[in-house]
Length: 287
Length: 287
Image (tube, rainbow over all chains, first blue to last red; front, side, top):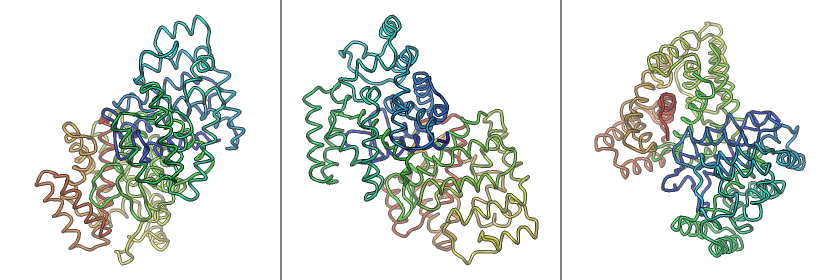
């Protein structure tokens, strides 16, 4: 597919995702985090455009493109991590879209899967070096290789681990890693759901409802890592209840206030929704 | 200046302008018009990126670039006119920025002025043909050549009027035309004001305050054309009062509700603020 078409679809996905509200716990157009504001996401979405476009004509270099995307993002805004998780998903998907002739889901999925399988040790090193630049907030007591620092880089190089292999280690507990090694299963599934919702609802509601559906089906990595299993389970159950009762706006807003109040932000869920939006827009979803 | 740098600065200007609130009477992240929603502006800002980038390497073709920008915008969203006025300003400014080595205001201004002076009959024809595509809402009892239709195109071709010359005719009553033939005087002046405000205020408040300052100093073309001189004068006086009293948020919100209620949207003022933001971002303004 045409490079400008693919890059614009990915950029619009980032903008629509962050603009949707209420998206319990996350930055939306109606509220900011303390240091990361809505405008930081806008500027970051603008910043990454050239890298997204370049990705469409590249067969390899996933790690380098992610690292450069992070660097561009940090140069255009001062709000810290905005798109690290989203870029992890969008870069291989944009590469796949550039290599495919149509937006056929199965073709795209296979290509993206192949790109991830073919990643190298260099790709892993680049992503691990991008991580501290992205200023992602993490706990320090996480499993081996999950803290993306120079010690991990050394280990990756010694053991000659490809990006795919390092992600396989984190896949059991990390939603994004699971997508990247699992063939983008959820991304495509929720892209279809998004398009179904968008036939009957506004684009904003289609996004927030898809977000809640995902939150009700998968525990969010950020939430689990920062707040533990019990809280993570609670968030999932609350989301399940809201979905079961038909996405009542008032309930979504209350849930949003509750999570914002406690600082609980399901960031990985938002990243997957951005990737799903990208696939849906590629396939013709319009505002 | 680098093409990606210039294009991203222009795109970020469009996104920050439409996101700022309260911007009395206009679409912002907190409210939509009936048929033109916030998301339509986001999609349009994404759509025009390749044309903005191309403008940076072009010495002529103002009209063609504006027409193509409008076409791209309409292909990516269904909310009608979003960026016709903004593109009229941003295209020659992006061309100037691409041709200049630095963001020195005086150099940029001179180059943009020269680009406008050198426009051709073709440029005029292209802009007049873009106008109906942009679905701008206008009254029909406006002065000669102001209705941009095929009759006007015929007249332009017969009289061999350049874009600059046609804009000279509308300049006395049209804020955007006045900028385009007057050397972008207000764009650069309000860009400086924006940067001054942004030193002490959030980017959102810097934008809304600059918007109100312009509204208090120049009658908006859209308002004057659609609602007449009396209403236009009233809007200016109300804005002047708010500026005089130090931009009290509550007063800005009340003024916003009042204008929204009456359907009064100072669109030309917003377009000039977008252009001023572009110049300020080129000069290093960041979020």
